[in-house]
Amino acid sequence: MSVTRKIPLFQQLEIETNSTCNRYCESCIRNSHPDREAVSSWFEPNLLPQAVFEEACHQAIALGFRGALCLQHYNEPLQDPRIIELGRFAKTLPFSQVFICSNADLIDEEKAQELDGVFDSIQIALYSHTEEQHIKREAWLRGQFKKTYLHFTKGVHIPTHFSPVFDTAALAAQYVERPCTQPHIRMILNHKGQMLLCCDDVVGNFNLGTFPETPLEDLWFNERHQEMLLTLQQNGGRKAYPYCETCPRP
Image (cartoon, rainbow, N blue to C red):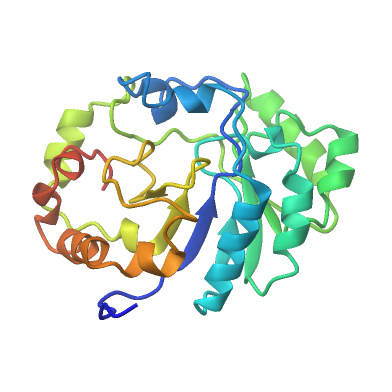
């Protein structure tokens, strides 16, 4: 590739291997997004082909990436029947960490035994009805895992575009002049292979390209993507892109 590299390589690679989730959270952008046709594939069982997943991992390593690999985005990874196989494959490569994020609803004793040691860590958001249930469930889960580290996030809801539980317009107005460096951190591929700008870009609003049709190096270091990231890291840079201008994240 002949384009000059103006930005560093991503620090984390995030790959959405399957489309579905077993929960409905009104604050989740897959549920609040107004264009239901655009998000329809998240409500049908769709899998990123295993060969595509493996090729993305290999290309990331070839680029010199040695950061963390997350096998999840806007989905529940334990609904992917291949997740353990995918995790084991990823662990054969020199990523600093291989992990998933889960609500843990599907983890019983048998599943815990299958998962333990496959991933370096599992980030768990528990959505218990009461604090007592939360404490009990967390303690039980911790007792099931001896090799995989569990990190609990308490099921915190984050403001996203279109969220009905936050005043997104007020938040966007508050943050519009701030620089945004989140897109520098992660390369995100959804289950369609689309590269997303950031965590709020669930449907590929910016048409950044699709893997494997476009190699990872070209997706990340193409001139347009680099200029977007350089613009967004400036004060007021969000105003250059209408979707970013209405972002409720700090």
